[in-house]
Amino acid sequence: MATIKRTNPYAVKGFTTTSPKGTAKWCKVVEPERTFNAKGTFATDLVCNPKEPAVQEFIARLEALRDTAFDETKETLGEVKAKGLKKREVYQEEADANGNATGNIIFKFKMNNVDDRERPNNKIEVVDAHRNLMRQIPLVGNGSVIRCVAYANPYFMASTKDIGVSLMWSKMQLIELVSFGNGGSDFDDEDGFVSTDSNGFSDESDVEEDELDF
Image (cartoon, rainbow, N blue to C red; front, side, top):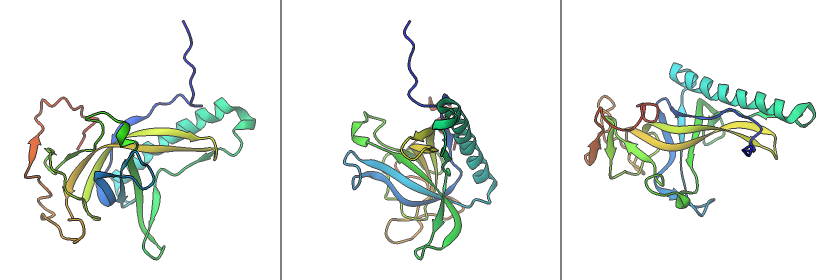
């Protein structure tokens, strides 16, 4: 039997994960962005407070995956080829309009090459605060409170010798909506955002808990 050749210099696999709550920034979930990718990209920045326990736990899981990929890559490449190998941060520091650090951090979620995907995997599945599936998805303004589901995928960038983790976006929970363009909130913080055009998930839903753990 033929041996399947592994192309990545590591054996560790990624996993599906649910982010902590944070605020959306530059959220493209209704129509894909095509400025830098003609095949379309859905993307959002998730802004979080790094002091929150849930955020720290999320970081730890991503870093553990990255570190395992780093160690396995180092072993596979050998001492000489592994020189200069670097770990890339699993988040970015947020900066304000003047370039000053805000104290918050950003996780980047993306679904690339939307046009190459078949239904229903060519869009982001969105639920509201009560986990109702939303048929009509509104434009999500900066400051909206969201959570994201993604596949945490380790990668090795040969050109820079970076080892990192990409967050391959698949689902989003819209908890509090800030309308795009006017900065207004449609719902009280206490109640959250509930879609008026929705289809509720029952307890017997075939969506696995790890895939939709809101």
